[in-house]
Image 1 (tube, rainbow, N blue to C red):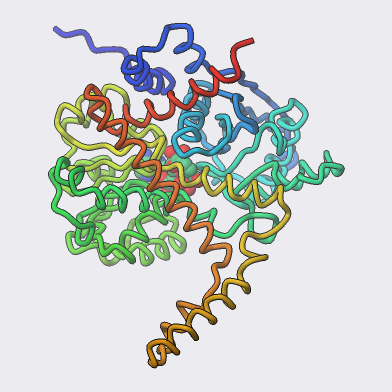
Image 2 (image 1 turned 135 degrees about the vertical axis):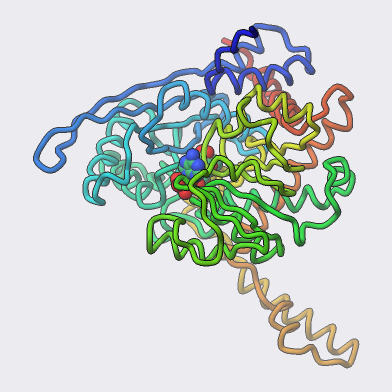
Length: 473
Ligand code: NAD
C-alpha cells in the first residue's frame, strides 16, 4: 500500500513553491537559503482582565525580511494561528511587496483569539495591550514595522493600535504611519478597505485583456457572464464578488462560507447576501439561492473562475482532483497547498497566485503610509487646478468645433481627480504592470510555465538585486 505523505506545513508549502523559481534562476544554496529564511519572530503572552478574571493571550509577530524598511504585513485574529503560519504569511509579504514594487520588507502578526467571543470593549483592551507589547519589543513603528488588517481585524483595531502607539511615542510626528488600514477620519486613506478585493478584480480584468492567456486557460474571451464561485465573503471576498457582480456582469453562481454554501445558477446578488449576513450572522435562510451545509462541496462546483478568498489550505490533495474550474484566482493567502498546486497544474488549470492577486491591500497600504508621512491628502493641491485646466480645454474644443458639450461631457472633462480616484488609478496601474512583469518572465523563460513560478521569479530577481547592491555583512 502506498504510504500517505506527511502533509507539509504552510511555510514548507511556500518554500517549495519558491524553490521552483530559485531553480529556474540557478541561485546558489546559500543565497537561496538567506532569501527564504525568516529573520525573526517574537511570541508574546500577556494577561488581560475580562469580566473580572484574568485571561492570558498569546500572539506572534514575524519579520521575514527587512532589506527594505518598514517591514509590512497584517495582523490576524483567529482561534487557530501559530508561529509557522505567521512566518509563512510574513514570507508571502516579502515576495508580494517585491512583485508589486512596494518598497517594504515582509512581516505578519497573529493573535490566538476568537474575536466573536469578546465584546467591543474587551477587544479594545486586548488589542491595546498586544500593541503595547509589540511597540516595546521593537515590532511596531512607522519606520520599522507597520501592521495592517487581516482575517478577524479591520479599521477599528488599526485605530486602537495607532492610538496606543501615539500615547507611547507622542514625540513621533509620523505616528499615524505606524499602522495602515485605519479609518479615514483617523489618518486612513480612501479606498483601503476595498483595496484587496478591488485589486483581485483588477488582476482578473488584466488577465482577460490578454487574449492568449484566456485562450490557454480554455476560457471564452470577455469577463461578462463568466460563472464564478467564491469562498469567503469577508473583507476581500465581499468586495471582489461585489465588483464582479455589479461592474463586470459576472454570474456569482456559488458562495461558500463557514456554515455552508449558497448556489443559484442564475447568479446571486452579492449586496443582498451581505445584508442577509449582517442581519442573521449566517448565509443560511437567504431567500434567493439554495443552501447546503456541505460548504466544502461548493469548491467543486463547475465554473469558469474559482476564487478562494477565505483562508489557507482550502484546496489540498484531498479535493484538487475534483476542482472543475478553468481559472483559480487566489484572493486568500495560501489557499492551494504545494502538492495540490502540482495536481492542478498537471490538470491544466490556470492559477493566478496569491502573492500577486491579493497584493492590492499592501499597495494601498503603501499609499496610506506615504500619505501619513507627507501629512497631506492625495489630490489636495492639484484637484481644483486640474478642474480649471479641464474647463479651459472644454472651451477650446467648443470654440473649435462650434458644438456645445452636453452636461455629462462637461462634468467628465472638467472633473479633477480626488483621493479615491488617485488611489484606484494607482492600484489599477500596479496590478496591470505587475501582471505584465509576470508575462515577461513567462515569455522569456521557456521552463517557466505557470503564473506562480513566474511571480516568484519576479520577486526573487528583485530581492537578489537588493541583496547584491547592499551585500551581506
Ligand atoms: P475576513 O475575516 O474579513 O473574511 C474571511 C471570510 O472567510 C469570513 O467571511 C469567514 O466567515 C470566511 N471563512 C473562514 N473560514 C472559512 C471556511 N473554512 N470556509 C468558508 N469560508 C470561511 O478576512 P479577510 O481580510 O477577507 O482575509 C481573507 C483572506 O485574504 C486571508 O487569507 C487573508 O490573509 C487574505 N488577505 C487579506 C487582506 C486584507 O486586506 N484583508 C490582504 C491580503 C490578503
